[in-house]
Image (cartoon, rainbow, N blue to C red; front, side, top):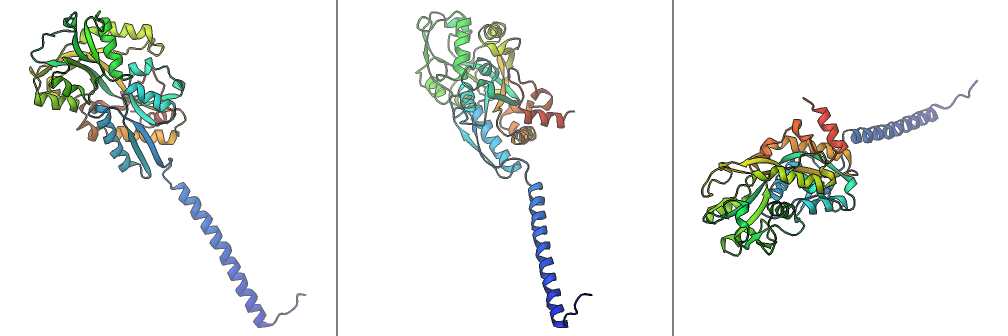
Length: 343
C-alpha cells in the first residue's frame, strides 16, 4: 500500500506535473510548428541567382530586365542579377563555368559552342526567334548581299565572340565574300553600330536579334535606313551548320522568315523584308536546382503577355513549342513543368 502524503505535498507534486506536461507540450508544438513552417515554405531555393543577357540596346538585355521584374513578383526570396555580355556564345561560356545560372543564346550558338562544361548545359525552353538584319542607308548601292563584292565597304560584323559575328561571318562566306578584298570588317555591336552608321564611320552593319530591336528603332527615327534581304541564304546557312557544328546534326538551325513592316515603321522604305531566322533558347546548367528551374519556367510562361508588350516576338512563347529546344536537352525542372501543364 503506497504511503499517504500530506495534502500540501500532494498539491506541490501535482503542480510540478502540470508544469512538466506544459513544457513537453510547448516543445512538441514548437517542433510541429517548425515542421509545418518548412512544409509551407516556397519549395525552391531563395537568394541571388545570375542571368547573362547581352549588349546594351539589344533584345536580350530588354528581355532579361522584364523577366527580372516578373521573378521579383512571382518568386518571393529570389533575386535575379543581370550580367551584360558580348552575346549568346559568351552567355553559354558563363553558364557552363558557373558565373551565371541562366542566359539566352541562339540555337546556332549552342550548336557551335565547344567550350568546357558544354555537357552541363540544359534548356529551360524555346523563347522567340532572332532575325538577321543587315542595315544600310536607304541610298546605299547594296540591294543584296552580292552587291558587297569588290566594294571594300566598311561593315559592322558584331563584337568578337558574339552570335552576330558568328552569323555575319557565315553569311559573308556563303556569299563568296572575303574580308579585306570585298569588305572591311569592324567589331561593332548593337550598342555602337547604329551611331557608327549614322556618322558614316561604317557603310552597313549586321545584327541578329528579336523584333523590334530598340537600337535600330532609334536609328530609324534619326536616319533613313533599310534592311537588305537575306532569306534566300537559309538553306545554305543550314548546310554550313550541319557540316561544321556537331550540335547541329539532324537539326534545322536556320530558316527563312520575314521582318514585317511594323517592326521598323520609320525605315525607308517601310516594307517587309525576307531574312534568316534562328530560335532563341533560355539556357541553364544541369546542377542548378530543379525546383528553381521549374518555377523559373513557370515565370517565363506566365509573363509572356507582359513581356510581349515590349518584346513583340515573345508573344509567341507557348508551352507547346517551348519544349523544342534542340540542340539542347530540357532541364529536369523544365520538363516537370511542361508535363504538369500539358494541354
